[in-house]
Image 1 (tube, rainbow, N blue to C red):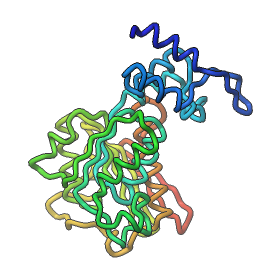
Image 2 (image 1 turned 30 degrees about the vertical axis):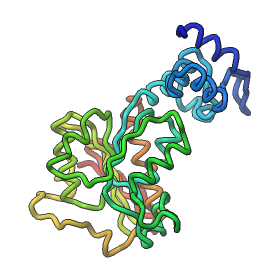
Image 3 (image 1 turned 180 degrees about the vertical axis):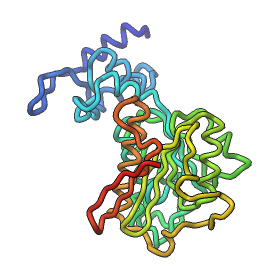
Length: 285
């Protein structure tokens, strides 16, 4: 089927929709995109992109309008993000990015869910204890947004596989609790010229920063890598679900700003969050 014929089918399936305070615009439903994909053998995401290119908004993205343009949504659908660590931060990051419409997501985590994860790790349930975090994250994404292309690596990132696993993504999101692996990710991202979004939580406090390849990055926060313990202070202070959610949301916002080249990213600046004191502070590094 030609592209023009498919566009005509998309137009036939579209319908006018208006939201409160917004003008009417044509949109197309998930079911219609799914049926068109099955009928034409064109990928779901490609149909979404074609619709957006013709100012027809997939209904799942209608509430993104006015914050994102149709062009912005296309850019997100054509983007690739790698999430390293699918626990507390990573599970929420995956949830938000899949609902936002990031076209390709890569998951890296060799761990399985434990009962102690249930307080803050949104993908964990009583039924997923003992199951792979990466696989369950992938399953969750497919249920939320069938247009997303996923790659799942049920393994821990290390010096031997880091370059291969991180290659080919536009942004990497660090959702780990292992300081030495954090420095390894930063090193590989710099080598591959990939921006890195870093986030960490300890108790009711958290921090977020975006690191570009030419930035000094984590050394500004933690000092020299050789003096680091393997785990941070979160083992002593725990991690509250509310704080994990805030930091993960900020990480996702950084990812979106990088991909769309909009807003003021937290580059060479560290966001410090203290929920007990209701304080959000940005410090220059």
